[in-house]
Image 1 (tube, helix red, strand yellow):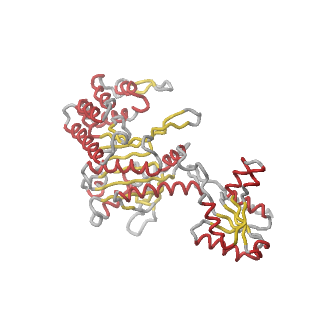
Image 2 (cartoon, rainbow, N blue to C red):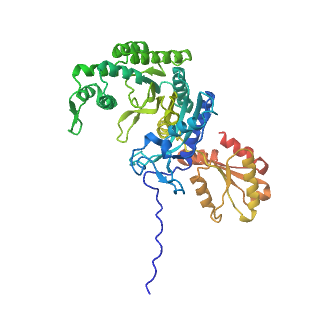
Image 3 (cartoon, rainbow, N blue to C red):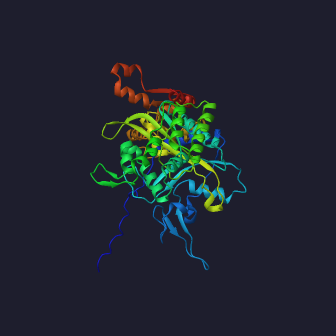
Length: 494
C-alpha cells in the first residue's frame, strides 16, 4: 500500500501587494495620525469610523459596469435569499464613498454642516508595484453641507496646521490652490462644448507637470513624440484655440494679486470662470485674515490633478525640500495631500445636490517625508525596560519589580524565555531596543539591591570610549531595591 503523502505546508508569505507593519512602523504612524487628529479636533471636526465593507451599490462610481463588479475593488456576492439575489459587497476603496453613504443615511440626525475626519486602511484590487500596495492608510477630513468657500479656506488652514504639527516646518511646504470653475471658463473661452473633447483637454492639462508648456501645446494640437519615440495623437485644436489653456496654466504671477489678474484675462467674459477667480480671491482673503500668507498658501493654476473630479476649489500640499532618489540624485519630495470641493457627493443617494469639500493626506508619503527630515526614525523607538531572570524560582520577585515599573508609567517586561543563558537575555534586550536591563541575582537579593544596566550608554561607551573613560563612566550601577523606579526613570529622562 502506497504511503499517504503528508499535507503540503502552507507557505509563510505575505499576499502579493500587501505588507506587514512591525513595531516602529506602527508606532510612528499612530503618533503621526494622533497629532493630525488633535488639529482636526481643534477645528471642530468629529471622528467617524465606518465599516471596512460597503455595498457595491454604495461604492457606485468607483466600479466599472461589468457582470462581476470586482475590478478595482475586492468584492464578493452574499448568499441569495429566498426572494432576492445576494447583495454584492466590497472592501472600501477609499474613505469618501463611505462618507457619502453616511451623510445620506443619517442626514436627519447629523448636524448640517457635518464635519468629520476619518483615518484607516482602504483596499484596491489593482496591480501592485514598487511602493504601490493593495492596502494602505488614508487620513481624510471633510465638511458636508457648507456651500461657502469659507469651508475650503478652513480646510487649507487646517492642512497647513497639520503639516506643522507633525514636524514639517514652515518653509518646507506650500499649499497650492486652483479652481475647476476657472478651467470651465477657459474651456468656454476656447469654444469647447463637446463633452468628449472637453475630457480630452482635461487629460492633456493633467500632463502639464510631465510634459511642460510646449508638450501641452503639441498635445492640444496634432500631437507629439513621447520619450520612447511613439507618436501620441493630439486633441486636434487650432493653435489659437489652445492658447487660453496655456495662458491659464502659466498664469502664476509674482504674488496672488498678479495671479488673479492673469486668471481674469485667461477666462475672458466667462461668468463661470470669473466666479471661480472671485472664489480664489475670497479664499486667500479669508486665509490672510487668520495669518496664513503666501509663505504657506498660494494660488497656483498649475495644480491640475483631479480637476476632472472636483467642482470648485482644489488644493494640494507640496513639500519643497530636496531628498535623494534611489540613484542618489536630488529631487523635491512633492505632493503629500490633496483635496477640493465636490458638490455631487451625496446626490447619487438623495437626488439633491449637497455641497462638500475635503482633503486627504497620503499617510505613507508623509511618514516617508518625516523620516527624510529626521523627524522620526532618527533613533529607534525605545523598547521596554527588561527585568532579567537570574533565578527562575524567584519569578514572583521579578514580577513585583516589573509591576512597580508599570505602575509608575514605565514600559517594562520580565524576560519570559529560557533564563539558563544570561547572555541570551541581554541579546534579547538589545534586539528589543531596551534602554535598561534590571539584574538581581541571589547575592543582590540578600543585600536588598538591584543592578541597573544602562544599555544606551553601554552601547555608546563600547563604540566610542577608551578603556580609561569606560572605567570612569560605568554603564552598570547598583542601587537599593527601593530605589529601582527612581533609578530607571533617571536613565530614561536622560
